[in-house]
Amino acid sequence: MTNQTLTAGDNKVTFKSFGVDLVGNLYLPEGFDENKKYKAIVSASPFPQVKEQVMATYGSEMAERGFVFLGFDYLGMGDSPALPGEFKQSRYMFRLIENTWDAVSYLGTLPFVEDIYGLGACQGGSIIASAAVTDRRIKKIAMVSGMMAADAFQWTDKAAAHQMIAAANASKQKIYETGKPDYVDLYGLDDEQSLEEHVESSSNPMAGESYSYYGRDGVKGPKAVENYTNMHIGDQPMQSLFSIAEHYADKIVQPTLVIYSPSAFTAICSTNFIEKLTNEHEVLTFDEFGHIDFYYKPDAVKASTDAVAEFFNK
View 1 (cartoon, rainbow, N blue to C red):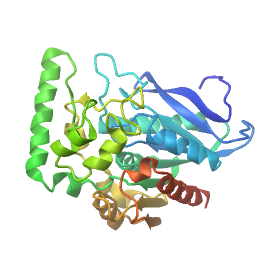
View 2: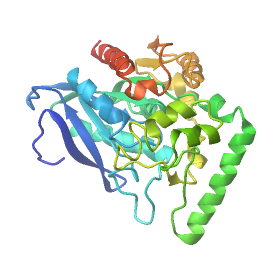
View 3: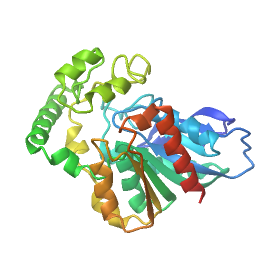
């Protein structure tokens, strides 16, 4: 831990993970006093986001509700470096969990932090749930539009899954042989497409709402967020197709809150997870919102952050 002066609002911080400095934003509530004790939240973002996207939105909201909130760039993402000999935009699932454990350790060094909670959105829901299985320093967890039980979502169309795996295998071999990164638009959305081009070329039922957030002209796309790109290392499906959290759901002991939209295409990733929970848990649904609405639309963000704050304050 450094001896930097921390103030209310957004503070740039770093902490060690895999021997390098991960870069984060530590959001502190109004009237912050380092001599007081606060509840803290470690966050986990959707794939393939950086800290200036969902974590920035939720960071300021949760700080307004009195929490300390840590959003950070995972290894190889955003402002955080890749490991020596590796490449940027390489977001690997198992490392995300370890980065999260190290983020918890960092929060544990802060003298004003009391209890630590976990909050994840989309893939971040799987990261937080997986991290919590064996990290009891995390006292409660909450997931918003979470992808905790993604097997049915990702493997129902086995032909598509096998196609992704074949492409990822080829990419990994290419990277190994050339020593150079192989960047691809994993979901058919690159940094140059218009909304019309993307929707026309995509079979994804979420294409329109995905573009509204991630697209060239999206609210948090590559033109709006300097450190963000839709182009990522091509071998990532070799890990992203693993869905760890759902297979350990019955091992989670921390009180759990699951927030999702029953009308969202991804709802099964929450419902299948909920069915396997054996701990104390709460479920909150909002049929009027879509999966990505929870990332940025004011009504959806307020609904989810109000619920998370109430749950963590119990």
